[in-house]
Image (cartoon, rainbow, N blue to C red; front, side, top):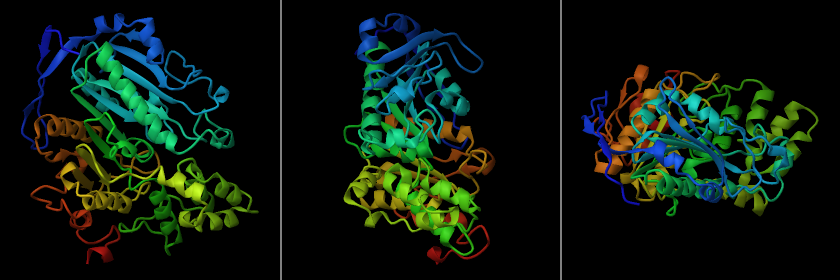
Length: 446
């Protein structure tokens, strides 16, 4: 739709990292008036289950708050956007929450939550990113397809049966991302910059599944700490648990899981073998004690599993044929998703001839985050990455160094100071100085 000429909002964004200050002049609309024009027919067509106008709060401007789902008739939500009737559902729905600020610009950032976080929790987890972006006029959306075994979708066995399939993740997020863009275009402001952001599980079981999708509606992606997908992460963990002493490949760190039970839980959890192979999970749990269970889990080999299981894993693979500009970052102290998988994914992107569409940032002392694997990436680093992506997409500006706070200013692996656009492993070795965190030579670097 066209933009009625009401007003302009000019925002001057100055990157604190040495990037040249750029004008992010964005067309601003009065989205409070647009929200109040929302019709019941539109609520039904876009599967909006709940909506209200929220006043400004500390750090957050006044905004429209909308909750819904894609293709999931029967799902119900409370006023906070929490799904309340999970056990009545035959299929896990793809839920969404969206906030559109009063002075709305033509840009939107769409999250998939990390870990087991529900969609509504993202606004707290990423307040340091979301607040500034909403004040710049960004609409913020979260789409969430929970897996069997996630909170609200337990017991695991109740939701792992048909009609569940691992292709639900890709299909659910693809359909929902189109729904959200259509909703924004019809009711609020058509996005000129429509971006995906995720880290951890939000990448590995969410946005990274769409990065090679020609039909995906996104204009660009920021993908954090997703490695090379769930199966690679599982096999990397197995390799680290089998090493003597237990070590993370390449970096030499000790895995977080030191007991047999912790290792077992990590391997067969909802973001583990159980993602695609419930029969193997059953076989593991049928063993008489935790040591026998762990031994069977450590013997997992997806290539020897039935065809249906192999297909289920294939639906969770990342495609390397990127379609849009993509910023990828990974902390090298990460003991949750190991760096080797991230390097493998970018190597596949390079092999697919798409190195011009990826910018990789490797931060030596940054970890995954969360209570068990600190220190986390600073949220200012996320904000810098989104600004860099926006400038890359909208004006062709090469993404410069990103400010990672306590970890310092970080150039990409395609920069003059780290000229490794075609060699992710070479970039890793340069950042690490050729030695792991124990001071031992990294064989792959020599």
